[in-house]
Image (cartoon, rainbow, N blue to C red; front, side, top):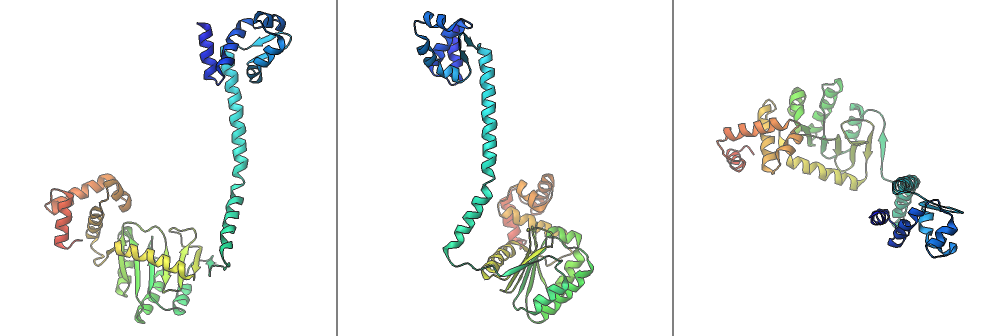
Length: 326
């Protein structure tokens, strides 16, 4: 029974059946002179040493003038220690390899540029605040419509200067369109109302993740990194980049809801909720996009179904479309 347990233990530790069987035969001979061990097993000392190499190489036995054999518990502890050392060595090696990744990435990037002639991207980083003065100079030197995303709207002294510049721009026949988050209707309705009064076209999304401004087909301005922070900003004049961000804006504009009634916050929230339901979004997704709790979403959906006298979300969507709410 003892031999069977040893064989099972040793093979589980990765030894071959032959090595496991030899271990079970050597274990009772622990501490014996090697010459006696060899004679007991009917072999020579040289042949025994060669056959026991897998065990001695792993530190399970020690072959000298006498034979030393670790017991099963000691074998497990010893093998765990060896595995831990190998794991640490592997970790250290992988860490060293990871330090080379930036060089590999840099090499790959450089190799890609050898496909054709290299040209720098046309643009620059504006490290200072994107002030009304910079905005006015950029607008005066360009043509075409103005598009922007505004994740935050605050009542700031410079805001009136921006609104005045927008009014002057629209007076020349240029179109100005802006997309704002639903929160702006709650936090700065007066600012949005002034923008609408001077002719800016405004639409609302549940959330707007980054600042962005596109001026005609010549400038795209956005923060680096992307987000609600307004500086530093990157001013890009590369045509392909401008076309890309313009397409992004137009897709958002298509999905956004017109803010025709800025005083009707409940109505705007209802239309956004209906739009989310119509898109097939789940309650968890709607809560995340509208920035409200899951409980609030479910309460508003229930109220909406009641207002529309509908028994299902499908019926609610159909009735909302019939009433012109969508």
